[in-house]
Length: 294
Length: 302
Image (cartoon, rainbow over all chains, first blue to last red; front, side, top):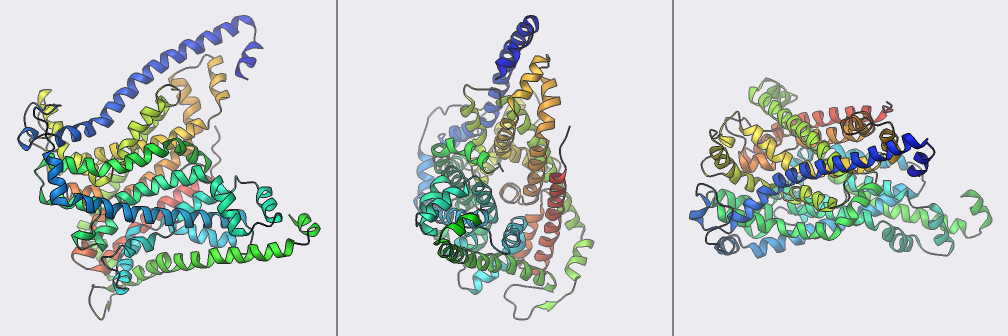
């Protein structure tokens, strides 16, 4: 399309335009690569330093000048973290809570988004905006009563207290509703006329079509849930219930100067989320585009 | 849809099934949002009007005393100032960096995924893990940053230990942690700009900064506005990094509103006062949301 337009011009400006574009593209891209690589180095440097420190014996962590590679690489920081923090339990606890919260929230929000996006009924918009309005309520506003409610329901120091308030979230409902507008009504009506029930339509047509958005939101919610800190800090009181970020912060408080160990703990906290993201990253840009970003 | 309905006898049965489905989904939804969002907000407001302490049988009604106390409390003023400092510092620095990265990343075909992944790495990292790493980088005597400064012949900076430097340090760490997210959003905004604009500019002989200034920025303004406002709202909520790295110090220079609310509610157990602070925060967020709604209504035309 672009070439056609250029060809309609007279020959002189045609060549000039083409050469300007080609050389301009090369020049700017080279500069782009250099600047991006510099930026990327700044971004990864803390991680490299984290990994490097995590393999150093305590004495080597505080040497000057700083050494990128440990002279005597050791795994003792990692074994220390596993022993003192009970890392296996932290992983299991965090994975359990993060998976349950993510699956429940994404499922219910797809369903609610579908109802708000694809059906017409009285009061729909009022109800939708009522749900959406909760998006702007800062967690700090309702966390105090929520805590009192959880304690009154005898749910203090349980995972129920973490899961129940996150059964659905306005943000996810909003994004799924946006996505539902892209599904043609005819498709759903055709299924209805063929006799498919509403739940069947949702599970075998809508949900599969929503896969890029589901994948994106699963990745983001898993990440947020895996990293969630404030509410678990308030609700969980015994160390056998702790989740990773909480365990890590306790470790910082307890072993604040053993940097090798702290860096080993940080590395161990990062890996699982990284794996999830790498496995779904091809969906993410598409998912963001489909929901009109955010 | 109506004409289909008239031609199909099964239509009324379908309508009934639809209505049942809607009710089955919406009834629990509304119950959830009523019980776990609206009720606690009302409850919090009720608390904020009382001298509400945890584990006390009779809460004493206090009218607007909590709010009056906040107005008169110089520490709370400082807390609000700190919060704005953090929110604006992080958002402005973060959006500017993300914009630069997104513009650099947009025309690239080879290796774009790798760069995106690298910039996104800190976003995936839990804030507590990031804060732990930066606590080590900022360490005054043995930290990498001061090592590098000394090697460059510069004096050490007391990053987290000085009231002047602590907030900038936390801002830098937070920009590092969040810039990848903003970059992805701006990048998808850039992808939405039709290639024809750039081609037209190339034909007119415009390149580099001129293209950015006259095509990219104007067309990206709605996305930039969105990113800025949500960045500010997110900034008002900052908790984890100050909790772990400075605990609000030194001399309350990094004490933000969220940390202050946490301390009042769950350390001192003065929940009424904490709730009134939360409503001040709510007011800040509502103000920003109104600004955003106003900006969205503008027809961005250039």
